[in-house]
Amino acid sequence: MTEELNGILMRFAESGWDLISIPAQRYLSGEDCHDTLIKAVRTADAECGSCGCEYDALYKRFLELQDEL
Image (cartoon, rainbow, N blue to C red):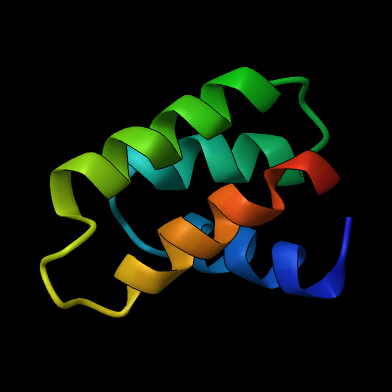
C-alpha cells in the first residue's frame, strides 16, 4: 500500500463518520475487509461526494488507488 493510500485511510479512520471510519480502522488493523471498505467509500462518495467538504476529493482518489490495497 502506498503512503498516499495509507494517509487517506487514516483520514477516513479519524473522520468520526462510522460509514467510513469503522471499515478504515478495521482495514488498517489488518482485518480482511477489502470489499466492505470499498463499498463504504463508494457509498460515502455517492451520499456526500459533492458536498464541498475535505473528504470529497479523498473518496475519489481512494477509488482511483483501490487496486493498490
